[in-house]
Image 1: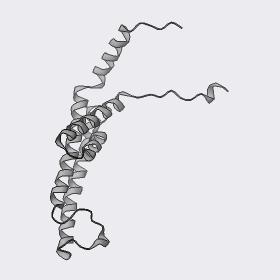
Image 2: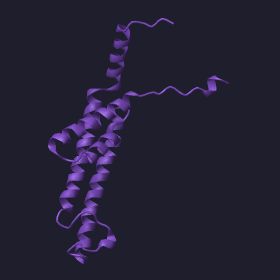
Image 3: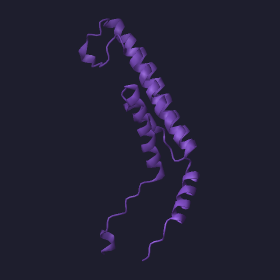
Image 4: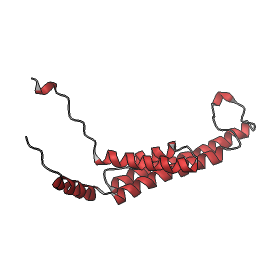
Length: 147
């Protein structure tokens, strides 16, 4: 009975660490560029998979979805501007003004791409097989605990 009440051990897997590394590197790069890293970090998170194939699949889906959504948003905003050239209909709740909606959309596509590429790079540089070998080598060097 006592064993059933014990809390499960916390496990932080290699993919979690690689995701954190990828998002952190995006945030660091964007810090020096003086840009908001939110969309790049989201791209990095969604772009990290268990292996390179999963990263390509998930990151590619995220990037292509963002590109399709970005161009669709540009198109719909353009239609909106035909009816409201000043962009002054606040009932439609657009948060981007009529002067910068294209640059905003293109920047979001670029930021997502940066995050996805960062995750692909991290997964390519640190594949699971290499990390497992490093982990085993480290375990072999550490002294064994008694008891």
